[in-house]
Length: 456
Image (cartoon, rainbow, N blue to C red; front, side):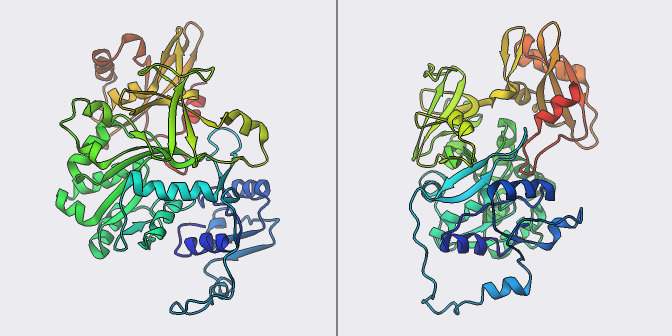
């Protein structure tokens, strides 16, 4: 279903009944949703009627498909009045390691895998919010503007623990003007946002001339993650909207728990390494350990780039009906994330790229994010994505896809000069592709696989 006021009722009701939840993003094609339903062996589906309106296709193979706006759904919630404390149906007892949330990875390459998230995983995530992300009180309100099928939805757990308020915007999605107005109306909002959403919030604040104080009346905390946030973008966000931001790094396999870059760390401009910290994803959250290793799983010295590993009670039980993938991802209790990064002496983790996005040109490793950070400082540049293109001589060469700001014309010679000024010559792009937009998945991540396909 799309974001809906009954989403949380379905989710917590299922757990009350001792069932497992399979969240499916409503933006997926019906056939993609059907594949997940079949793979998960799901029995009931709670839907909004609009999810099949684009193709006219319907979900099959289910015992029940319930439209959450229908009289059939209304009957499910005809329980005791809120003032009553007795319910006829007791909570079904479950164990810590029982399946709670079967989350399918976004599937940017091939079929998605079902990540088995347990009650222990979700409780760890909920409590880590308090220790590493933000304090929550009963007066607070979380707004669900990003898909509730993803991190935004499970952030309901810490807000439920704290007795806070929950709000689905009338639009059911992300509209910056709507969110600013709602925050003014009902009190400052907290929300989880991909970096693309953060940029749009900042754009709105800047374009409408909102002061930092006015932004604070609309937003308490914006937790961002799920895709790279470039240093230039968070510096601008802090300058325009003030200290409203916290960064988290995690994966579907360790939901919302990996590292955190706190509000205080983002504000600490007096620290001698503040610039480097802005480009990091922070330090290990309280419940987990973080390592950076080579291909053999051996720890690397500080500052050297390797694969990021996570260990702790937030790490998944494994992949649903896929023991081979589980054995590859979890070794000796450590989750091999596939992300490349390095640690500094204070424990700050800086991500370079996904291991599959690494470019090897002439035998040298090139991390696209380093080039993207430089190009985002160029005048007139809105977005950048750097990928490797096959090359007979070098193996791969660097190609930059660049999106100009509205009304701007980009000079590739000027972009090249900036790269030569800031990074080693061998890292600079050999080609610049000026495009109107970058392809993204349902969660705002740039689909570099699609960009690479354009170059083949």
